[in-house]
Amino acid sequence: MVQATDPVELRVINDDNVIAVIDLSVSADQTDLVAPNVKSLAQAFATTKVWVRAVYAGGVPVGFVMLSDDHDKRRYYLWRFMIDHRYQHMGFGRAAMDLLHDYVRTRPGGDRIYLSYVPEDGGPEHFYKSLGYVDTGVDNHGELEAVLDLTTPRPAV
Ligand SMILES: CC(C)(COP(=O)(O)OP(=O)(O)OC[C@H]1O[C@@H](n2cnc3c(N)ncnc32)[C@H](O)[C@@H]1OP(=O)(O)O)[C@@H](O)C(=O)NCCC(=O)NCCS
Image (cartoon, rainbow, N blue to C red):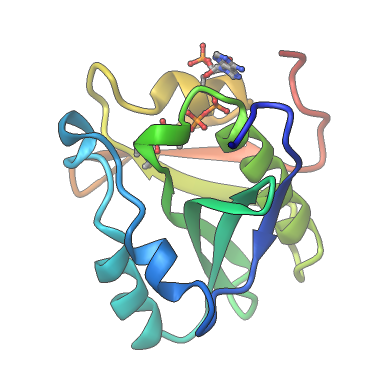
C-alpha cells in the first residue's frame, strides 16, 4: 500500500509502465483542470522538445508530468501535471515538483520554470503558490501563467 512517507521518483515512461500511466486519473470534479494522460502522451509523441515522466511513490505509479523542454529558447513550461485521485494530499505532488525543478536546473538557462493553471475553486493555484510560483499577469487561453525563480530557495512549508 502506498504511504505518504514513500520516496518519490520521476521515471522514464516505456513499454513496462505506459498503460499504468494512461490508467491514472483525477477525480470527476477535476477533469477540467488537466487533460487525460492518454491525450498528453499522444501530444508528446508528436512533439519535439518535450520531457515526460511518470511520478512514482514507493515503486507505484501515482502521477504524470509533461514539460515543454525548449533549451534553444531556454524556456521551460510545465505543460501537464497530475497526481491520481487515489494518491492526492499525500505530499507526492510537492515532491514531484521538487524533482521537476531539479531537472530544469540542469538545463541550459534553466533558472526559471513557467506554468499556467485554471483559476477556479478546487484548482491548483494554492498548491503552486505554496511552492513559490508568482503570477506573470499573462492570460494563456483562459489559464493564468505563473513563474518560479529556480535560483532562490523554496519557501518553507
Ligand atoms: C494539484 C495536484 C497535482 C497536487 O498534488 P498532491 O499530490 O495532491 O499535492 P500534495 O499532497 O503535495 O499537496 C497538496 C496539499 O496536500 C497537503 N498534504 C501534503 N501531505 C499531506 C498529508 N500527508 N496528508 C494530508 N495532506 C497533505 C499539502 O500541504 C498541500 O496542502 P495545501 O493545498 O494547503 O498546499 C493534484 O491535486 C492534482 O492532480 N490535481 C488535479 C489536476 C491538476 O489540477 N493539475 C494541475 C494542472 S495545472
